[in-house]
Length: 131
Image (cartoon, rainbow, N blue to C red; front, side, top):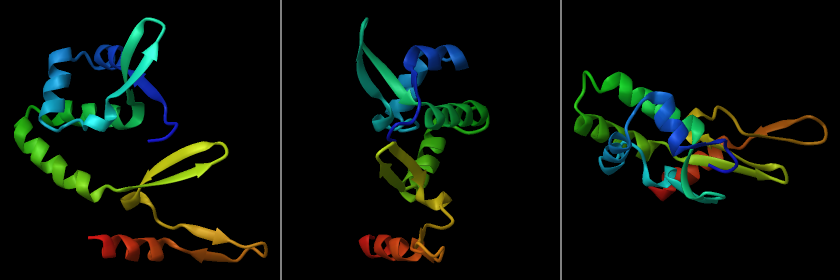
């Protein structure tokens, strides 16, 4: 998740008009992963923050689907999806950037002559060996 923009719990609840209880019910059911609940010290004490893009996409999806699908069914669907969504994290002197591996189309090394070598297939083979 790296240096992704964060949104506070208060901002998230206000933005989507959801209750504290609903948020933590979704957490208990596995709809929002535990690792997205980031505790940080602030001037007013400790607050909870979330990776903004990830949690907002998830909350919007939950709010859209919860009328048609039971939360338990949605949690089962997401748990299978989460296992497929491994991340690649690029770390540089400017910070970190995370990408879902299933969204990556190519990873190229470009030499000084401009020749590209796609290394994504090597990474995918390594992941296949891990399973």
